Amino acid sequence: MWRDLLRRAVAPFPLPAAAPAGTAGSAWALACAAAGNGGDDESETAALRARVAALEAELGRAELLLRETNHRAKNAFATIASLVAIELADIRDPKAREVLQLTQERLSAVALVHQALQGSSEDAVLDLGALLKRLGGAVAFSMGAEERGIEVRIATQPVPVEAGAALTLALVANELLTNALKYAFTGRSGGCVELTLRRRAGRLLLRVKDDGIGSAPAPGRRGAAGTGLTLVRRLAEQLGARVRFGGRDGTSVTVSIPCGAL
Image 1: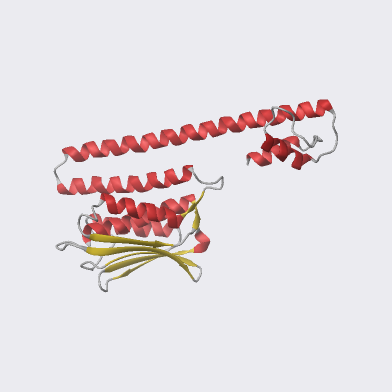
Image 2: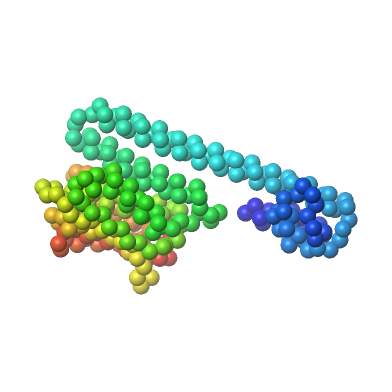
């Protein structure tokens, strides 16, 4: 956006080919490209230099504001996480603890997307495949998968998606992974959970499969697992996606998203 503003600002002014001393080279080159190289009138050059300096100062203020906003958001996530952790330390009721632990997991997923956005391009497009790899590793660690002998396999393709869709699908993956690690291996140790992301026939397929005890809870069923799957369905609806459940040799949940929704 700032490049377009700079082009419009300098378009009326003819520019010399070389940048004056003290002027940012990139901005000056952009200005020259916008206005051409004809003319060397000193007053016009001075006016142009002033416009470039003003626009670069405005850009600097905008970047500073963005950094400050990101910093405050990061602090807000950390504060909320600390408050939840304090509550968890004092609560003994199993159901209440489970709800707070799920809240922690969901907060972590949102924070991960926010962190990824800080290093993204101006268009805020994220690589969903890379994001899900990071998310899967974080969920596996927080759920103690390695200590329980559960292998978490993640196979994703690079898929550029808009930030809003990335957040929605990160929350979907978080719910499915959490459900699998929490409920699929009740009464047994060891197992495998797979998270895959691939394109096929104009759709994006996000699947979480485990080789556990099978029988995924129905969405809407009382309890954390049923609530999580209800959330998965509602999030999927935002992208016009379909959710399919399978129960052979464990449980699999596939979310099929039209690529046009991304």
